[in-house]
Image (cartoon, rainbow, N blue to C red; front, side, top):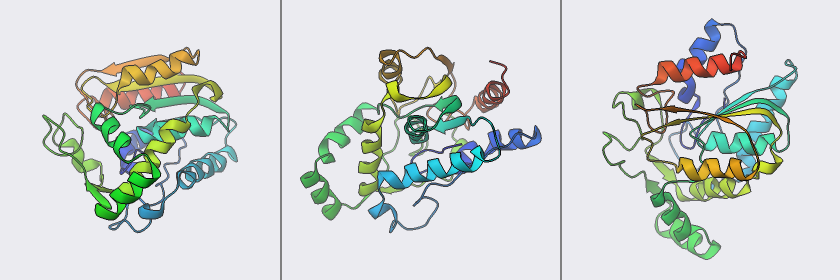
Length: 242
């Protein structure tokens, strides 16, 4: 279970409770630099650090399981795809995968995604506050205003870690993914990703995959209004009822 950028394993809290009840094995690592009250690690984070965390989690489970499936949310979905380029994955469930960001993210990426500009931005503004999502009660992209309390997401992020997030996006090669099956789950009201552009990457790579859309949820559907349906669907997929 690979959580998203500035999130934590609590992205999957209801899902993991359900899996524990059904005696399903899982591992939900906390990516390096997150879950802390300061940014000293995130200021020097590298893409290889988060990929190493994902590989370690996979290899740990592979010691006790014949097959390993991955549930990746947002940037965790990107890391799931990078992991599947170097390790065989049974079922890969991508929840709101951050293949292509929203228009505002693209503008920010274009602004800082050169070495010179990045160093200038890091010097002038090393920490960036998350913008308030239009129509949302907080910076978090939830339709349900109560859902963010379970997320433990950070309200601010280091600019250095944002550049790493965008570098990971560009490293995904869907043609190199080694997975038995792929499922993409997304919220119809998400403001954080461009789902059509993201799915096109899988289409262009020749993947046959299944999508499930949740009409009452945004970028974190497993915690939003449709969370019961989302988590039930994930459990059913993992148990082979797909």
